[in-house]
Length: 401
Image (tube, rainbow, N blue to C red; front, side):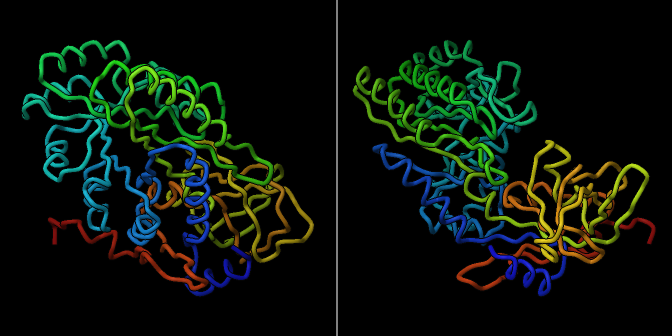
């Protein structure tokens, strides 16, 4: 998206705002489809947890994707957006059985991720067809907060418990029809991906009625020019090799499922804010912006790097700044970042903000969440209103009035 359009959006809708370019989402979807086309039977399911605005979900559905949901609310939003029940995969973690029953009654595909939930589920239904989320015990991902497939993780069924599931299936209590893994986010090392692929196919061989394997997400995207990213071609090549081996041994075909979130929407997003003040101290030059980690938490929570540019003065001499928000604790978007000279009132753009921006936003410090905007066919549309004071008070009950 060019600077003119970014500035136009800020002028028209105010700041801060989340802005998404739907053309970029389509380009990413087409890119992944092209890479996956070497596989016989596959399906892309978009990870709703990364961005769940209904206009975005409807656009992605039109592209041909299914939906990956991690909560019953995401399932229901997906259904309202027109996804069919067999196009939605629900992968909960540690939820109560009532939520799983709710998903069952809605008819969506369910991935169960513990022996405990499987035992309770098969006690309610006679020989139900189930899908397993396996913990491959592979440490992968950019950092410990987003590495979810290692031996100490709360996610997935430990490999040692596979024998218990095979016993349940032999006793006619369950019918395992699918296996799912998700080792982490921003996975870069090919060895980690390769190991996870081998493990899931080796487990699939143990079950006679497997119809699908779900590889989850975790594809790393570049956050700035020259940044590293997952080698998609190599990743899919390794899947193809293991799949061919699986078929030569079992004689069975499978549907291969992929659940990208960040890969599809991260680069499409731009978070635009404005400079309130420049504050100088003996040690640092702070740029104080009209937002905080309540609106975009990734840099503070994960230490994530996001490119930051000055839309008002993009090509001037660069100076070193610390970009900080207005929240009442350490609220840093960037440290020692060289950016074109910044002045009070300048528009600042945080890039690669399409994933886990609004969806992880909060009302901390009683701050309303900003509006969401999209660019579609060269026209700007508001796709979510900004919150205000009434939004913050709406569901509260005053017992002293």
